[in-house]
Length: 357
Image (cartoon, rainbow, N blue to C red; front, side, top):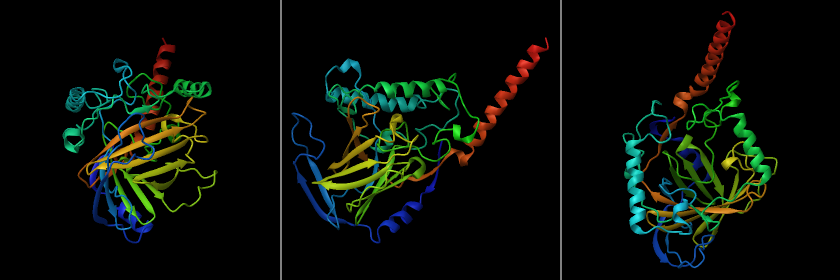
């Protein structure tokens, strides 16, 4: 669980490294109702886009944003084939989501000592998140459900489940394997918290976008991880090179930033997708001063039976993003391994006492 301290400073060093001069937003604002590249909903009216441009002419996506949302990833059965909620339903779900942040500490067990999100500036009412009228984040397939796994992927996932997650807070009786540090997941080792795609989290759903000539940079609040996306048409990396966030290349289609990512690192993919076959395409379109429509399409034929897409509204928020102090000064790994050894010792002592009776 990360603490928050001072404003993270490394981001500025990275920006300076990738661009000598940051693009300053130009004093030009325009409205358009043209279709959004990659975001064309069948039968829907043309979407509005809000265009303010940087000094070098890019549509301006810069600023601090949050992906926090109370919308389910997959459409609940009660909505059937309905893609959108009524205004009243959307407002009610939003209200219940905010209330939930007061009453529960997200997915942690009641006896787990964690900080209260409503005290430490992590809640929706402090981040300006607007209600979402969609019944699910998944928009394709039309039923709002993630497609089934392929038979091969289902076997892999079941084998991983039987091996036991290192930590499963929803099931305190789940098996835990902590023989060596490599048994711990990437987040517990402070290596990476994953992504893309950009999804809502229980908290720390915030990030910053900075644009420079030929680049777009995204810094996530989780672990202050950074993606630097070239826009200059350079070729993809060799297939033998794998990064925590994959290898991204971006380009503009009208007012939409399109980012294509491959070369994911095994063990660091979304929902355990196959790093060798996973390809992801993201679409960023600023629809008004306070909103970016973010869509991603996942294409991994060895994991899911068909490609699928989701739309996550990104809301403007006040910055800056505080520094993320991972794993309480990196003591998690030490404590988890020490706890596992203590558990083993206690079990051995118990077995010894039983054998002496």
